[in-house]
Image 1 (tube, helix red, strand yellow):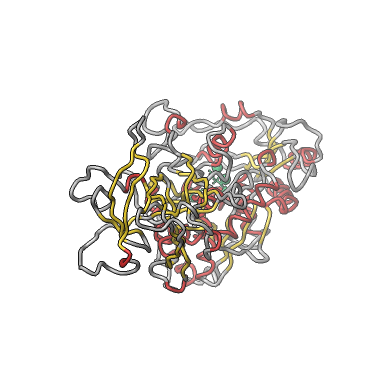
Image 2 (image 1 turned 60 degrees about the vertical axis):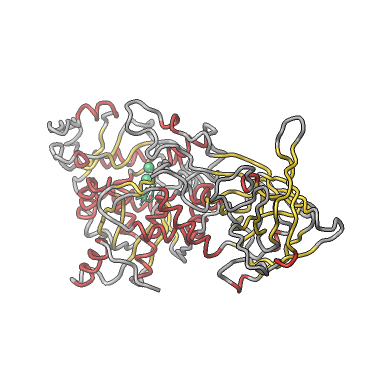
Length: 555
Ligand code: ATP
Ligand code: MG
Ligand code: MG
């Protein structure tokens, strides 16, 4: 395996190891189970699990579940599935922040005893009014100097459920004049009666992210805690808790921030994705147009292609947008190398070979992959009548049109060279309904004996043997690179791509299910397709378009 390219995080880790500040590398991926993981999370997963593997350390999977109202078992299970599907294993290291509630509570009591925290009775509105602005310092709460013993007693009564939601909070006593607003006595516990998906009703106070996160990292012995750039301003707070409890916590993790992934033509916040689902713009979290890992999976994106993508975009320290085509190219590369080939016709035009006996049937040997003989071959049936793509025929073609036209020849993929002799129209509409052709029997798997050149090869499906399939042509969910951005007051909904899904009925070669690895196929000359795992039924497959053969979007 080639070593991963270096990046600024590796350099920091290398320096920590060289200086003897660390002797191992333990990272974590800490999703909140409040939705399904998306391609942005894949970047964090590949980064954290990848570093752990490269440094022979380990990566923990931690459910960061301190927000009872939005979390569920369903989401937690989906997160585990998604990480595994991406190809990563946490072994024995699955953790839940909710398992640390008791310890976090005890440390909060300790902070109170150390006069580093106090119980405050300001409500949210009043707290906002006291917080000050970027240019003006905040004002102390009247409760800021509450004696530790009194705060301790109140905090215990908060836990015991003696007060209604919101009546009190526990706040860190830091600095109401700090230029960094995050340090102006942030709330670290709130009273909130809400059933927790794991803890039930055991708690009615819950710790805030900024408090729970550094301490959870410390409990697990995390050495390098990687998060996205918007937490850079929170790092002083992360370090503050660890410093105030330095003699209590078992480890001293280091927070390092990296740029989050922004991908064009899609949205990536769980809140927005939830709106897409709830409002019915998509069929669910696993709709193949969604940037969720379940969606990409159902679309047919191989996990390996997503890992390649994450490696290719790298990790940096400045926010930028990655074009969707970068991801799609990774998918095409992977599928070009691995997907079985098959024949399908999406927009059929009937062809009758007038010089081919009606009762005859033969089979052509067809390679399942042009570059991989080990992928084997299959026998594709052929008879007097078959279908070709309507746009592989032109009645009055330009010179450079190398497909079928009156009097011209073309090769049928795996089969004979045929010539178009006659065009049959519907007398009423004038529409072309059939081509009458003849074939050169000596050209089965051979070039014409007289040396004449036939440039084009087209795909086809035998009329007698064809099977039918539903095909879903998925395209980008949004029609513009940055949905909802750029124009004042424009809603992202207005940027939805109205043509993100078209459905059609296709004719496919028979026995597709027998091709090894047939879940992912390239319909030759059309695109890459994936057998929909939910809606396909025996004899009634549904194919999702994973990607076109080439990038057709303007750059
Ligand atoms: P969202 O804003 O989409 O709801 P989140 O950050 O709130 O995402 P978490 O479940 O807290 O979701 O994320 C878990 C981890 O994934 C965090 O460490 C976070 O930094 C990382 N992560 C989330 N989104 C991205 C992204 N777009 N690019 C890189 N990492 C991300
Ligand atoms: Mg979060
Ligand atoms: Mg979020």
